[in-house]
Image 1 (tube, rainbow, N blue to C red):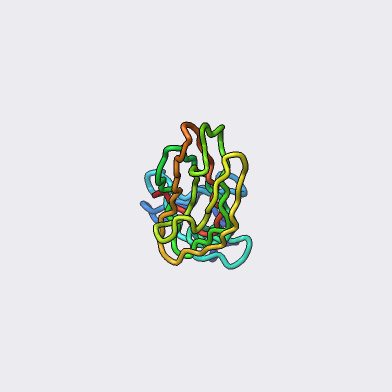
Image 2 (cartoon, one colour; image 1 turned 60 degrees about the vertical axis):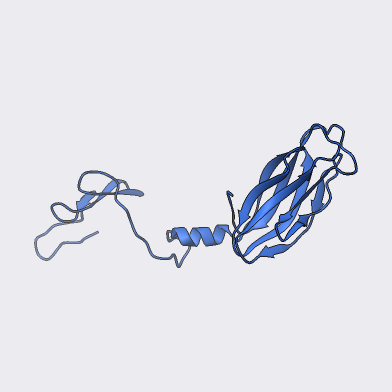
Length: 178
């Protein structure tokens, strides 16, 4: 708010302020919102610095950093005859806390050779080692990946002729589409 600019007796500033004759504008829609527009009325980009107090806006990088420190989970569906199924890429410094595997429907003909493990090319059962077609099973793995690494479900059909399972990966960090 401008109080009496110089000695011209101009009070305040209008709800809409344009910077220069062809410059961007602040458009005040009400007392709690503004729009930033270019000289053609399209939304303009606003650049902000890193937030330092709670009432500041945050940068995308600050938001990503904060969200990656939260425990999250992703679910993947695998079939009895799926073979090796690439689930996701664990990004550097991603911590896999646990993996849960549970049947999503009845497994027909499953036998002692039927199994699902979850891991990576260095160790196919690093994250999950023994699937039970009749129960929900969890492995508390607590494994941190230092480099980008493909997470894979290794499905051994055995005698199964039908069935699927849900693989839930609990993690802190970032998993991306393979």
